[in-house]
Length: 146
Image (cartoon, rainbow, N blue to C red; front, side):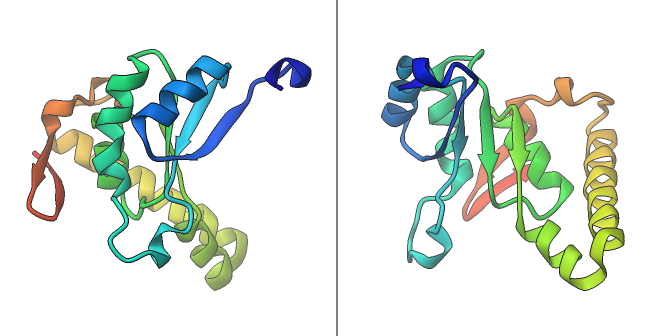
């Protein structure tokens, strides 16, 4: 199937390490960790809770995109610290677009970037590549940056 496409392919909505391994073996170039529709399911596993195990299963070089749950700069930092190469999000973008159009979207991206930069500065780092798993601590009900 992927051979017929001939281009890079990303598989979306992976939540299980075994599915991530299968996607890699099938020739996908990256996966998007997402519980698409999970906000409607009571008790769905959080994306950050699956990220580390998927990173371990796929190895350090396989690109992982955390798709969802990003509301602030510290969320980006947590995702990268737990193994994501990138994040994607819709809710902040769509809310900003609805409220103020393109100006709102631009401002929401500026806010996320400034929050990420501030969080990094508070940790004593200046580059995203310096974010490590030691900077993200689990606690009851989630993760915190420390």
